[in-house]
Image 1 (cartoon, rainbow, N blue to C red):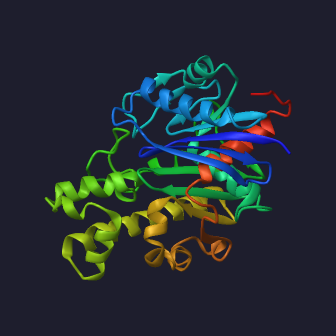
Image 2: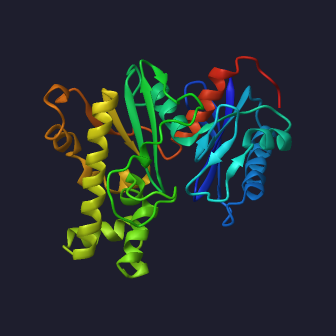
Image 3: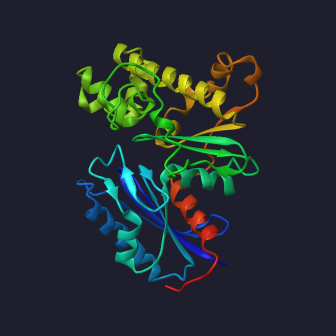
Length: 306
């Protein structure tokens, strides 16, 4: 049985695990992402996790999932939630540190690949994934293939423009879906409203929304309405069979998102009605880690011993 190491670089934690061909997590480590978010500090954590795992297991491949625009040649060109990451040769830098080749891809692409291999999109060739967390990530499968564009950086579904008001998104634009339907966006909106910082978490805000607190109602209504607008566009453009919602925010707000399929169906063109379902991810918070490990296994059929 082949094993692979998967590393998922997140805004809050860096996760690493040893994964089987069937997606089972054999071992798992999670370390807080350095507050600096500087490349060298993040790579130091990644190296530490890999070294820890390869000391215990014989693996055939290593995959690393990174936030941001990850090009085909292994550069992170830009990452809205890691603002100092510009034109970083991340693949090369990690390989130099650990002494082995890796597969590098965008974290949402990795997540979607995991859903395609072992999750709710298994045997589904046309679907999109939205990860609602610190930011809004996205990935597209069409005809059973991951659609990434000519440079490999396509699929930034969180940066479709759905509004015309601030605050400014991490990408520098105004009106991105991420501005309204991510944790970072929600916190910026709360700050603009002068909202007490003790309520700057998704569950506290949800409780206030249910209690009818005006600011909480306004912000969560934006979260839902702009998400619906974005999904309507995705349905019209990609004609997916499934729209999968993943990430911590989709889990926290699952109850108020359950009727999204109905709401989107009410607003799409008649020819698209009832052609899709909006579902919640079947994988855990380790989906990106599992997906990139499976991606590395598929890409690297020749074993190397660590």
